Length: 454
Image (tube, rainbow, N blue to C red):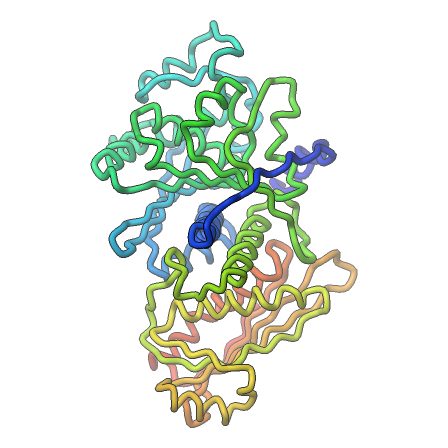
């Protein structure tokens, strides 16, 4: 019902032209770091939702060393929620705060509150008083009533514990001036983190401690608000070409204006998804990350923000992944291969990937012993298009795990379709579904298991 509503609501705006993106001039090292951050932000934004793929992404973040804490503030009008994703890096603790987009009826009503209210104050009490002010003009900084209500309820209202999340965040940043908070969100979530960053700035948080990355986010305020916070906030707005939501409010005669650095990505491949959906943004972030990594000649070990923390104490020799995909999906295979290999490397204590010349199990077992590995993993990724269904595919991963003498320990097949995700995401989803069975065999918890999941 929600997807249907979103299509109807945005359908009348599909003919709107996209604004030209601003050029990105970054040094190679900074460019790679930026691509990692954008991909990580997309993962966190996806994890903030509650759905099939989103729950798996959340689990994957946790499995790879990220702590994921969920928070909720529910009232009669607002169902506010956000996730705080954090991880220790050498000499630094990285924090990402992610807010989901529209999911339920309360969110839809929030989206539809187009009227503008005053954005002022420097603490929760003055924020609440400012929005009640009636004698305002377009020269004042005005923001979307619904987005402001969502942000103020979620972050500047005391919960059952008496803690006001936004105040706690401000206090933590003040106590650790060397730390930085990355804020991210999709659609409504992007609007909320933009307003949260503006509120934190008004409370005295230095601009250099905040970095906002949004995906498909609408404008949040008028031109006066944009001028006031355009220079004060470090904001990157990522939009997919063809997504109408990022400029929906500007099309209304209400004086909304976007600000920040705009980056335009294009939807690629045969994807049966509306351009605004977060799965499309995650797919584009993944492609952008690997395109950047390949072009700059970087290795997975160079990905400081995306390196996993191995949780499975096993040494595995991975035979070359085999692909049997429809012709229109063949261009996705390099992304699938790289992402699948990275997921394995993030989980396993030692992972050796075989060169393409290793084609037989015998050769793989011999090479595994030389490399000090105890296991051999073989996997085949295949796909087939559903008849009479537009761009919908069944993606399957079959894998078998052997010891280095060639004895099979376990085999499994996982399969899903692309009705709610892209082909690349579907293949990653299949590998994640097989993780428990694979690692149970690697740690000796099962001796043999033949499992098919759909």
